[in-house]
Length: 140
Image 1 (cartoon, helix red, strand yellow):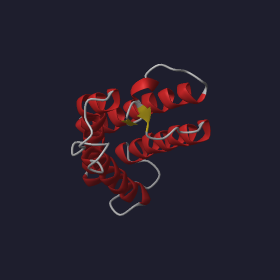
Image 2 (tube, helix red, strand yellow):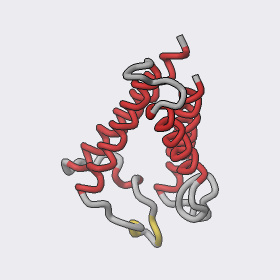
Image 3 (cartoon, helix red, strand yellow):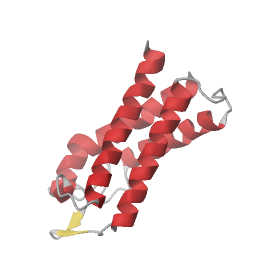
Image 4 (cartoon, one colour):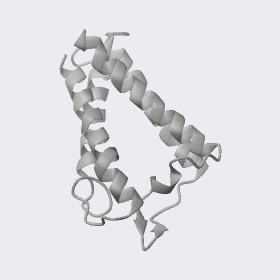
């Protein structure tokens, strides 16, 4: 049961996050106020619609990797491309959770902004869980 539950949950979360990024690409505003780190009340950067859509595609590809590896499809075995993709995605999400020590992640110093609050409560813990989930399915 757990051998397929974790990849299914990973895929569901990643597809949901991809849908949110597509929503933003299409001009939607829901959740956008807390989506980017701020400095002095101004966004640290302004992602273009193309960059936001690229993130959505990346999230969908990560969901596909979770399904391929978790359900042992298309030659998914230890040492396969799907296995190594899970290792890489696991490391990427864990690194995202840890952060870059200033604006993002558990080690961030800038706090009190809408992004920082949501990052502490949701974004970083979710990134850590996604990372650990990918590392788990890489080893099963």
